[in-house]
Length: 86
Image: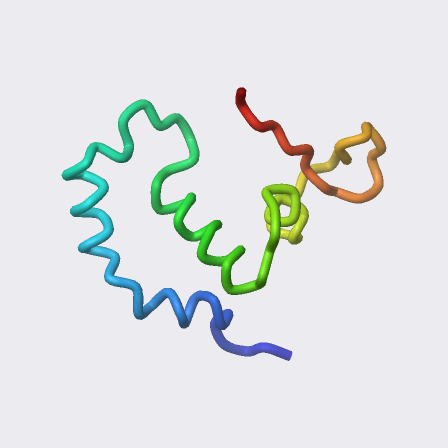
């Protein structure tokens, strides 16, 4: 049983967060962002890279995105459907 922090959290401690935030501000990365911030997107992609995810569906179904409904309308799995704008 894990009594400490997650390994991903420990790895992200080495990430230079102040530099990242400064770059986001400098290049207006949060312009017109509603809910999924640049930091959230970076963390999702870093997690995907470290866990060898191959697609957006893989990332969404990796167990981090939960909802009471499944993509096919069934209510038993707790998976959230993917909605890709386009």
